[in-house]
Structures are given as structure tokens and as C-alpha cells.
Image (cartoon, rainbow, N blue to C red; front, side, top):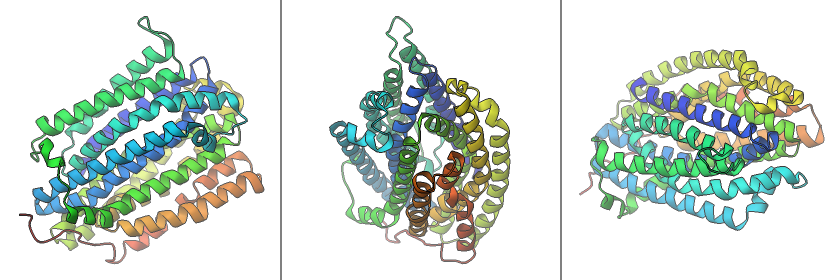
Length: 448
């Protein structure tokens, strides 16, 4: 599990550094806090897109991990073709919608009366949305290869992203090497160029570098209907789960976007701290999904149960450690941002990051179960149901009421955005007590 998880965790660390440096650079651009707030709100839309795409890929992992346990490479290639085309199609559709209706979409996450932030957000979104297409291709291939324990490309991409994003941001935001200073538009353009380079790197590695499975471009030209139906039944719920949860995230950000620029900036800083706190969580969860899925795929259910018990203990300990780190680093981390010069942003950031640290323990534990154990064992439909109920019936209503009806203090509004993290771990714990979570989703008959 650690062979898979540690490279993913390292990639998460480097990706975290890229995002943080990007946010810090934008916060020091001429538009300052307004640019940071605009980029943060638009990035909530980007998060919805990337979560949908990575969710679809994670859905393929439900099938690939179990077929990998059976060493059925022919079916794995067919899954690759299905998922790649679905991801590319979704990305193209999203870009078309964003290009046709940018003002309406930005108006969801930013109060239109805040014209300065809205204008910056529109200029940023118009460029950054083009990065979704190369990202879809890269994410699909890397995610599927990772499920087969091909993790070296993960490190290559992480190093490339760190170097290219920071370099391009520095050049384009501040106008170096004789180029004009583009501010927030420079940050968007840097993202697009970095994603294009990342896609080229991934394609070269997939077809020429990795040796785990021999893939040729023509393998993506035929869609197997049987595999397509299996993906819709077992894999699509994972994509829907991640997409709807990201949509809940967008709506939470939309509520925050109507509560002032200071809250938007502080929430952006807290989100960066959340990424720090979950660095190892989702890397380990990805490893857990693979090892549990392999055990279930080969019919070794006793081993799957033992893995489940060990993983749950590991993640509880990881949650405690990461929560402590986030809490202790909240002040020095917030001070890195140019917007922290505003006393309101600084004080609000410290308060909501403290709340975040406490809820992070529950986040880490239930992520190991839902994203790792349950998904790897084929129990993705249950995970989708829990996330939908928590997001739409608990989190969003409470956040809306706290913000606009009860008019609670802003830190309490933030707590409502994470209220499900305080109890979702209990659901995960009891789900794994029995055997309902073990579901072998492979087909026995080999492909001709």
C-alpha cells in the first residue's frame, strides 16, 4: 500500500506547493486581495470540473483494481478506452458551456454587485477553462495506470508541475523576461501552458515509458459495450459522488461569495490548509483502494477484512497527526499571503483554520473508508448515497440558514460547511463492521 501511496502523497505535497505559491503570487499582484478572491471563487468551479473528471477515473479504479488482481489485461485496456473518451467528452462539454455563459456561471459564486471581483473572475475563467481538456486526458491515463501500481509517472508530473507552474506564474503574473505583467490573466495562462506540457509528458510515458501494460493508440478506438455497461453501474456512481460533492462545494463557496471579500480570501487560505492536512490522506486512500480491490478481485475476502481493520487504525493516527500540524501552522501559514495584511482576513483565517483542524480528524478516517476501502471493495453506491444525503440535506441547508437566516458569525458559518465531517466517520465505522461492503464486480469469462 505504501509503495502506491507514498508517490501519490509526494505528488500531493508538490501539487500543494504549486497551489499555495500560485495563490501567494496572485495575492501580491496589483489587484491584491481582489485578485486572490476572484481566483479562489473561479477555482471552486475548476474544482468541480476536476473532481468530476478524477471521480470518473476513480470509478474506473473500482473495476481495474479487481481485474488487476485477476491479471485480466484485455479487459483493463477496454476500461482505459471507455474512461478516456468519457473524460474527454465531459471536458469539451464543460468548456463549451463556460465559453457560452461565463457571466451567468460566475454570478453563482460571486455577488454581481461586487463588480471589481466579478470582472477579474471573468477574465481569469475565460482562459483557465481551456486547461480542462488536457487535464482530462492526463488525469484519465495517470489515474488508471496508478490503479495498476504504475506510480512513477505521478512523481514525474509532480516535479514538472512544481517547476513549470511556479516559473510560468512568476514570468506571466509579474511580467519578467521582457513580457508584459498580466496579473490574474497571467496566472490563468500559466495554468493552461503547464497542463498542455503535462499532457504531452503523460502521453509519452503511457505509450513509450511504462512496461506494466502494453497500450497502443488504436486500443482507444473501440468501445466494448459490456465494459461500458459495467462502468456505468459500478464506476459512474463514484464519478457522480465526487461531482455532486464538488457541486456542494461550489454552492458553499457561492454562499461565502455573498458574505464579503475578506471571508472569500480567508476561506481560500483555509482551503489551502485543508489541502496540507489531507496530503497523505488521499494518497493512502488510493493505495488502500488498490490493495483491497486486488484482494476482493481474487476472492480473498478474509485478507480484505484484515486490510480494512489495519487501514482504519492507520488513518485514525494519521488524522490526529495532520490535525495537529494544521493547527500549529495556522498563523505562520496565513502570514505568507499578501491579503493577511488586512487584520480582518488574518483574524478570520486563524479562527476558521482552527475549526478546520478539529474536523480534519473525522475527514481523514472516513476518507480511508469511503475513498479507499469501500470503493476498492466495490461498495461505491453506498458511498454515493451517504455523500448525497449529507451534502444536500444537511450541509447546504445548515450553511444557508446560518449565513442568511440566523446570521451567525462567519466562523460558525464555516463550521456549518464542514458539519458532516463531525459525524460521517461514525457511518463509515459501522458500515465496515459486517460484510455488505464486499462486492466482487469482475466478470469470470475471459475476453476473446
